[in-house]
Amino acid sequence: MQKFEDQNLRFILRAIDHTKVGVVVTDPEEEDNPIIYGNQGFIETTGYEPDEFLNRNCRFLQGEDTDPATIAHIKDKLVKKEPVSVEIYNYRKNGEGFWNELNIDPIYIEEEGKWYFVGVQKDITKQKQAENRLDASLQEIQTLSTPVVPVEDGVAVLPLIGTMTSERFHQMLEHLPDVIANLNEDFLIVDMSGLQTIDGDIMEGIFKLHHLMQLLGTQLLVTGMSPRLAMEAQGAPKDLSTLTTYRNVKEALRSLTG
Image 1 (cartoon, rainbow, N blue to C red):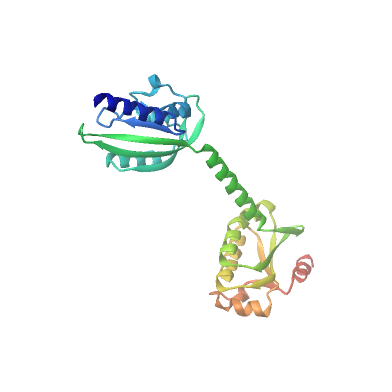
Image 2: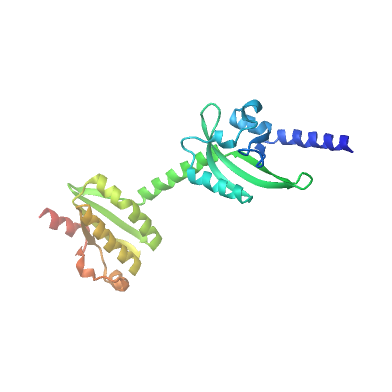
């Protein structure tokens, strides 16, 4: 029976060695919760050989850009002997950083009457890089969806076109101050003639934009407010008369250029 169990254990360990993820087992009842087993996937992921990581705490994988809050979260879960799953920035032996999808589970062995922790690592660096590229692309799209067009020296136009939802407008509002600050314009004309519909939330956003532009030293002008849009905007909590408005962009430019 013992021979069968030993053979079974060797088979299991060999199978674990052929997985594409890193697997470690630590002993929390030993001082500093050291690694007592690491598979081939762990060696390949981290670059450390068994004589370099056995009997050591896993913190040697941490470095300058490892998030302290993530480390604290892991420690809290381990103290409570609760499973934990995190994405943590670790370092290989050669100093190269990598994103580690780490899952740790506490395992209680009744025959021994003690706990172990089993950690499974997966290198998700390429996935994180793809996510970052996607975020950058989305950021660029958001910037492009805020089409501020310089038309005269010190004057730019922001045309609002189509159906302007509150979400779309507030996303635009997040990027607009940076765009205007970079352009260093004295006047921003928000042209609403291309809008199909508007509501009180968007008008409230217009007033917020008016305040932001004042802080940046840029005067906000509103053009193209049709009677229909004005009626739809009646739900706004502020008076439209506090805004400087013109019938169209051409009229606003004539006023500015005298």
